[in-house]
Length: 457
Ligand SMILES: [Zn+2]
Image (tube, rainbow, N blue to C red; front, side, top):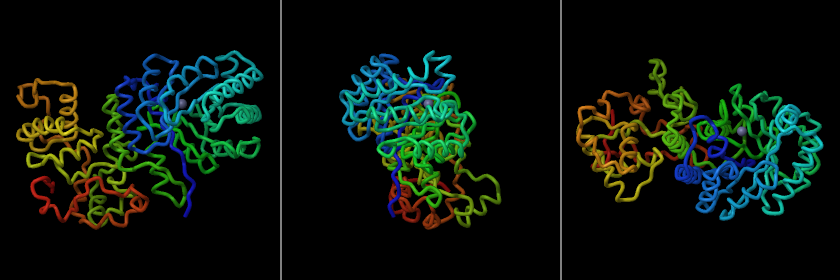
């Protein structure tokens, strides 16, 4: 069956980076962009080049180093911004200039202090200029959902005529309701000449907790690109959460029969990497990638899980890359297990770096019983920052690591007894790579895997 393909436009590095406490330097952005590439996003909005030299440099280095995804640079609707964005995108294999201009009366009157006529003209001119430089041009009428619909149609029609290839409809202030947002997309499709030639995109903010619901309503109404961010970060209450959108489509293809190119097993590593870089933690009950997303606490739930995980689980942890808590890292774990867990946490190492991490890991594991993900991340950070104090090795009185009693990051050990074939008929496992277990060693064969794995009970 041919399902419509949805373009995943990731704006973690632009809209996401604008959220308080989430700013990143050039190296951090490049590292995250490489992870977004592994995750399989179609478009990476790498930054807003005119905003700062740092932003310019980040867009430039991401454009130069990633060859597969489209790299987008944001620009206000004026020549200087568009030129600067284009300059930053010079090294890109697939560049996109993303032009935006507010169109709601409240923004025109109080923020931009221009008339609708001037707005229309400025949008058209900016897109025309961008198009003279780059074939791939996206236009966003900022605050579209609070814009007079007739005027919005007029602007969209003008930018399509001027050469825009994607038209994005932002719910900038997170004000829309799902049905309303879907209707707006339908209205545009009905009324705007040339709309069939372009991709319609959603960009929804989460001020009322509806960013994902609105984005999905937009897709059902005909949008074929979704703008979203890892962990749902973004201005104020954030942007639509990438992992929630992707998994909603994957778990409920009966309602959302659409495809994305996202490699599900990289969702959790991407989330962890972002949280680690920004030091903004993920809320424990966050859907898909929160610490408790796959934890079963209540006795009746645990009982059901032991009998069959399908009783309480609509997707497997493996389908989103959550490490299986059956794999416990301890002093008997080998390099392979350590490298795998590092990878699941978003870190890939050269042999030499891994040797150093392993050396420290063994010393630590000798002292504390179970090495938790949080310990491992600290250890990785120490090695990455060239910290040679060997705090972990020396075991100073102000011990850095808590005792082994710390709780498991994913207390799902309950499913260990459920057997190897209990997950076979999981709904989330039918679609592509999503079902590939991140820990690929069969549960029943672990004794034959020799020294490398120590399984929890
Ligand atoms: Zn936004």
